[in-house]
Length: 313
Image (cartoon, rainbow, N blue to C red; front, top):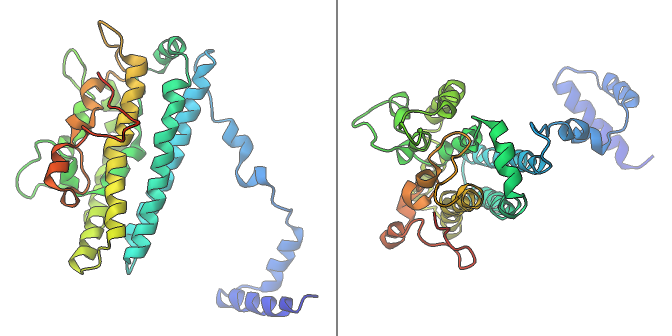
């Protein structure tokens, strides 16, 4: 027996005793337990059963799988932000390290849009998309949650109510609702009505919870204490630009690839007004406006890295 075994057994005994548990019973359970396999750990069979295309077009499998992968990266992003929100005490190093993780996730998401832009046949997409009505990527609640936990709620509003209006009262002024109006009638789309019925209460509650602990608020805590490091500031600026410019431009490129057709644009599946909703220069969403010089704010959404020209709509 290894010399370390008695010491480990003693540690286990103290652990279980502290919880009023009998260590021997747990050891009996360990003897009966089977070895863990990779496929059980990641629930592989269940995971691979979740891709259920609605048509026989082969490229629809790419479409649904891509969106599921995207949602998993959104989940990881929310996981990192929740750690920052709840950290006590919050240190600049911890904050910056988690933001660097988030930036890696969005970097992968940005690059992965090539799967959408170049990885499907346009003819197939324009056929199978009609079986998906009225669902839309607009209805990704996790992306909405990412926006809410990143910044002061008023930074997400258009024509915000004056004074001390509650989050619930401000919710109808949130910017994304303008992107879900019928192109012809300017009425709320079914897509938006579905989304609001399913998630509005959840999103309002999240915004209330994060009023004092969103990324912007937590950064301000450190800045007020003189602890906002250049590394942290750079990570937050990178995140702001990735989410509000680069990610949305990648999405726009995909829409232009598949939905832009002369002389008329093809409508999005949810009836969303994607031509005005997707371009970041029109949205002007900025999580951390105080971190950007005036000249950069004025050019927001107009400039991208040299290898990523802004698509023409």
